[in-house]
Amino acid sequence: MKNNLIAWEVSENDFPKNGTAKEKLEFFVRYAILAPSGHNTQPWLFEVNEDEMCINLYADRTRALPVIDPEDTELIISCGAALQNLITTMNYFEYFAEVDFFPSETDNDHLAKVRPMIGYEPDSTDKKIFTAIKKRHTNRMPFSDDKVDGYILEKLKAAVSEEKINLYIVEGEDIREEVIKIIEQGDKIQAANKSFCRELAQWVHPNRTNSKDGIPGYAFGMGDLISFGSPFFIGNLNWGDIQAGRDRNLVKGSPVLAVIESKNNKPIDWLHTGMALEKLLLRASSQGIAASYLNQPIEVPELRTRLKELLGLNGYPHLIIRMGYGKEVKPTPRRDVEEVLK
Image (cartoon, rainbow, N blue to C red; front, side, top):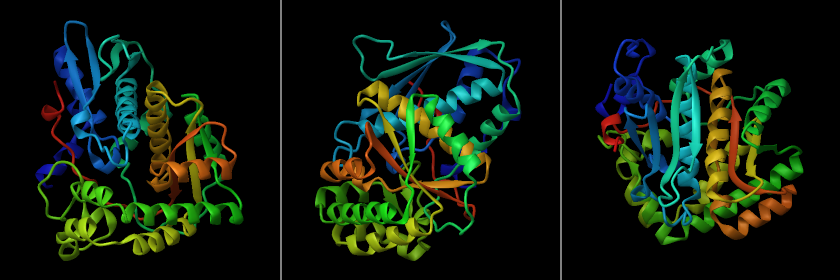
């Protein structure tokens, strides 16, 4: 396995059961960093405090995406997903996770303090969800025609609602077609924005990259040769029509199209949105269901408003997700745990 994929080789068998508190806490972080993030920026930092037996989670705003995410909403959502991985891992290893959200009155980057408390008894579902952390990979490829059972969708909605977040399933061909049109328009608007293209190009890499962040071309289905020129192509050519057509086909071939929304729109809501997202993704992955994002309308303010009105949402939409059954895909790179520890 390439050096930039080694993080995915973490094993539950490596848990330092008889190790120090520091060793155990750092082990938990190894699973936290496998969470998804916008452009795979991995915008998180962790501080292991052995004296207080806790892990502090911080937003790493040096990895922000100012063009598509000027308020750092997606950044904090990504951190929320990492936080949920941390909690899931602690639960699997028989610890409750005591979470103090935004514990500092002076440091807005300090998102959470997580303290493991012995005594949790994981059930079979906890074990399946934990195992799914390593199986979950964003799948941007076409899905099969197999339908997702309604019972599973209800379970996914229930998991999201645990964080007081709503999963809205887009139903009806007419409504789905209108959402597709909004996604297509988002593709074209973003592709015509040079600042957006330059920002995206910084995070898309050739397949043979040694970079430990960003998105290799293979995640978009590119071969080695095409992926080599992808940063130039993205940064200098208008590819909006091509992407719009591809996204139309992806959505039309996806059994499930959904939107995640929060009631309010503050950092604490974004953090819970990220936790809800990862709960959704892990439960879906444990059922063999893959997912990817179509967030273009979320990142273009006027389209976000149109989406909200079209679907009659009462809250704030943060993510558009397609789900279904597909072939396994390769993981994307991750930084070493040592690089994300403060």
